[in-house]
Amino acid sequence: MNTILTILEAIFKYIIRLQEVKIAFRNVLRQRRRSLLTIGSIIAGFAFGSMSIGWRMGSFNYLIDRFTRAYLGHMQVHAEGYVEDPGMYKYIENYSETIDEIEEFTFVEACAPRLNAAGLASVGEKSDAVQLIGIDSQVEEKATNFSAKIDLGRTFSEKKNEVILGKGLIDALEAKIGDELVLVVQAADGSMGNDLYEIVGSIDAGNESMNRMGMYMEISEAQEIMVMPNSAHELIIIVDQIKKLSNYYNKIDDRLAGQHLELHTWDEINVNFARMIEAKEDAQGIMQLVIMLIVAVGVLNTILMSVLERTREFGVLKALGTRPASIFRLILDEAFIMSVIGILGGIVVGTFFNLIISKEGIPLGTGFDIGGIVVDRLKSEVNLKTIIDPGILVFFTAIIVSIFPAIRAAKTDPAKTMRFH
Image (tube, rainbow, N blue to C red; front, side, top):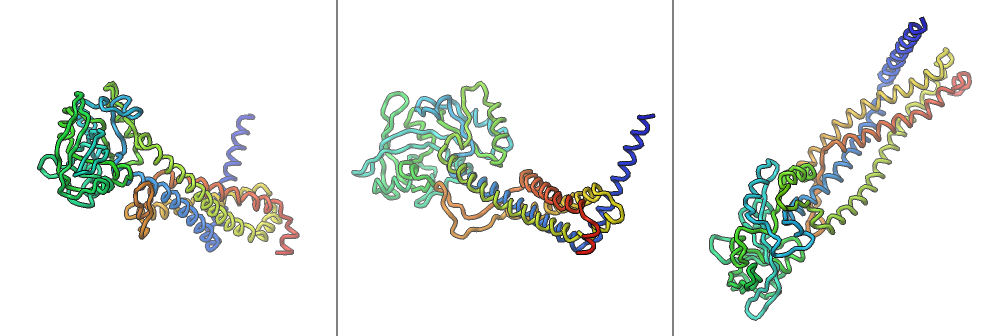
């Protein structure tokens, strides 16, 4: 018997609760102008918050992508211990086989080999230390758009013994396009490799150190002068989406397991740039927090006013015998309904603008320089964070700010309320 009574009581309470929600929904529809104002405020707040998150994440991912695609790559493969202590003899043998394995992944756009060495270059009476980089010009073009960085001269042709110098190095050697250069390097077999090369171009690598010391040649010629056939010191990997880098890293790392190779992401290779980006993200995070607080205050103000202006209405409800708990729940139900509708509308509006800005970006005119990379536009991004974070903020703001006026309305003195309102 007690069980039956308990069930009936639960059903009765459920029916009453449904009626309260129904009344709350009718109240939202009854005062359409006030409800539209509140819902519009929630939509605007959500969309603004979503766009601010999208701009922050999209712009930094755009900057990182620009920086890594310029030279560093999204990931790099090396022989064990090379990153901690680079050395000539820590190289990848038969690297073409490793490249074939990596390029089996559909998300890999390019995998470019490089061979590195220190040497001495001379043009006429001028000599200077150089950082020799042997590249496969065709693959490097696909990976880092190599030819676009040449500011004087041209890229490699089918002729042999051609080199391209960093723009700072060509100035230091007082050389010009077409000059003959003598290169001396330490070969892997202990001999001194040397040869004559024609300077065919000057490159702006977007990096002060590489501009000052960098000298590029075809990897086959670098292997020949260094007596390192079929060898490379690093493989540069470019992927289709940098925001999925962590997932891509795990897949490639699993594939390379047991081959005495190490896979590193860009932030492990260039720690200084990664720290600079992290510091700027922290600063942007503070600005975003301020923006989200402004959004919260806007939502709070609109809902608070929509509730307080109905003080006489609540007084009438109390006079008719409505229980305080019912009035309290009624206000929270209305806030819940409007916040849900507002969030759904905000998802549509915010995602729409984020999608547009993620494709075209917002031009910045002259742009600004970060780490040698010029950022000329703001980009946005659409992901779960641009929906979940503002959704949580707006929803709980709407509910929390309704609690105080709900308590006040529940405690309304009908006689005083109807006399003064």
